[in-house]
Amino acid sequence: MESISVFDIFKIGVGPSSSHTMGPWRAAQAFLRTLHDRGVFDRIAGVRVDLFGSLAKTGRGHGTDLALLLGLSGEDPVTCDTALIPEKIDAIHRSRSISLEASRTIPFDPETGLLLHMQASLPFHPNGMTFTAMLDDGASIDETYYSIGGGFITQEHDAPQGSRALSLPRPIHSSDDLLRHVRHSGLAIPEVVRENERVWRSDDEIRAGLMQIWETMRDCVHRGCHTGGTLPGGLNVVRRAAAINRKLLGDRDSPDVLSWMDAIRKEHPSFPAILKWVSAFALGVNEENAAFGRVVTAPTNGAAGVIPAVLLHYVLFCGGDEAGIERFLLTAGEVGSVFKKGATLSAAMGGCQAEIGVSSAMAASALCQVSGGSPEQVLMAAEIAMEHHLGLTCDPVGGLVQVPCIERNAMGAMKAITACHLALEGDPAHAKVSLDAVIRSMWATAQDMNTKYKETSEGGLAVQIAVNLPEC
Image 1 (spheres, rainbow, N blue to C red):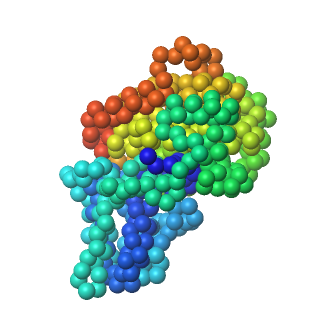
Image 2: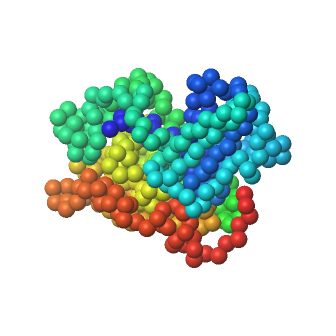
């Protein structure tokens, strides 16, 4: 089984979907690298991308087409200027050409170069895509990739390679493994995780990387809580986080993120106000996500608001510091990794339980860790959170990551906080369900779930709400 770093679970990128935006973006980059490796990049005369399954059915609403164009153009989701995305996409459509990696311009019409096979699905995974490069001598090269959730991509029969094939000092494939390492070493959960992370990075690099993740989350919350208007895509969903922020802070607000956080702290908010703040934090992130803003995949883009909301709750209302932020993210990342290995992070495979459910479990365990919970209580918190997301379907209205996705992040954050406190007041020795048992149950539920509830917009709310969206 592959070795997964915390920084594989937490990735900086662009919304609105890790499976449908981040994954295809990375696949486009991987395909171009393959063409370089084969020595044919300078002979490319044309490119076509065929999308299958869930990628075809909800790809336009999820921004798959935009991600593919940006990936082929040489843009990177970590560093690209998100404000320029519409301009770059419009230029490709107007010119009917694309500059591969900003260095080789070829004719390209998105209408014929990106093909959506609505009724076809590849057997390996619902999120399949085939890239084809036509060469100057009439030959062609094609490669098929799968976006398997959380921004991860793979090819069929791929074995772990490179950093994911490394042997870790404390290999963890289940929560039982994690607990065994904790008991054997006498270390806390985040310190066990840190030992493994040292295979990839120095302590300074781990610390800097975690702070970059935190600051990206924090800044995303701040942007979301200060941006109004309606979201793109045609549903005309009104952004709400900024209005909640204004109502709670009034003229005490500040455009600077640190001053804004300080203003919130000084409010000494009541319990109802804290609930509103946590909701605003989560809504703000996923409103940014829906608007193609920069977010942290945690563990997916559709569920990107849960962990920042709970982490900011810890920092602002529970006295959290930098050391606590590190422990929070290390714990959450390892729990996310265990879910990926034992089940899935892909809504196209498991419904929304694989996104909001996993993110809520990650956040619950992390908050329990920094609140003084024992290792057993930390894992109990994750179990409680997931137990009450089992069977959650993915039924995005209009194929957009907006309804019900944005509100679900607020609900996932609230459930995480509740699960944490239930675990802190509970005795794990009396628990009837283990975290590994709930992960097995989640995977069994995913396999039994009807396909129409797995990110296809063919069931649930998606067919109950009448929409007439433009082709965008």
